[in-house]
Length: 395
Figure 1 (tube, rainbow, N blue to C red):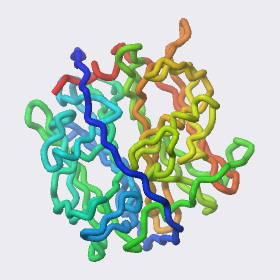
Figure 2 (figure 1 turned 90 degrees about the vertical axis):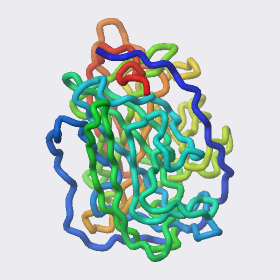
Figure 3 (figure 1 turned 180 degrees about the horizontal axis):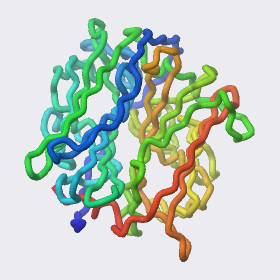
Figure 4 (figure 1 turned 60 degrees about the horizontal axis):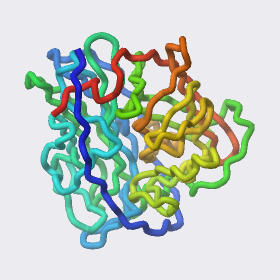
């Protein structure tokens, strides 16, 4: 049985925008390591997976130095963690488009208290301070969403855009994610990441956003697009006018042609309305059914209407990319020098279902700077649970 959750008033994080510099190239060292295969549940506890980055991906070191940090010139990749529970009551969480509270760094996140993420290397904050290695980073995460897994469990997702940089002596690090459930059982996943081109922002991995042209049809050498989240198979809570769906969507796009996928990973410079650096939301574009100016090549649609949190209806087929929360880029783990960009969104509104319709089809389409396109579509059932907050117990 799902448990009702009361909504929290969450702390918003403000940041000051800074200008984006020219972007040198970053190349990945060769590696033969591929993506990991899914494992079965261990010790009947939660199944934890780091879905971004993956083993042997390469991130930029960032431009920040001790006592001379960089707000918009950090490493600029995303960490996304998926947790699959055995039972809906196992892991407590408050789904939200903002779970971040930097004042509680090192402590459990009140919105996801059983969750912990650590990196075994020091990090440099945007204001030039050090976050000591192995600190619990859970309170730096931005968003949390869910989908309804088959059976008694649910899938919980948490995402973070990394504003921090790494000291020059860090050549690689390990990310460890753990989730403890109500019975004290722990699920863990570990990813090893390489660091290249120190002193270079993660923004250098991708060209600056520009006007993207193309016919919208898939090309053999267009971006390789994957809809990582929601989990497959899963169903989605529709949400209500009062409490959103809180479905977590993760789109991965590998730049197969090498032409570049224009991305402003930090969201820096969008002023109407301004959002904190680290977020790529561009809601002003909804009025004109425009593209997200931070990632103009992304088109993300539903085959049903979607009612945004402000009550405005986005018609079926209209681009929802301006609602996306975070984006980040890495050099691909396969050693081909290509770049993978990950973008994610927690749906802070509700799906509007026509009478008799029982599924939602999601399409993600990405066009690179050469006009080459790749896309993916998936269809999800509708959960019997009314909204995303009811999928997990309240902390």
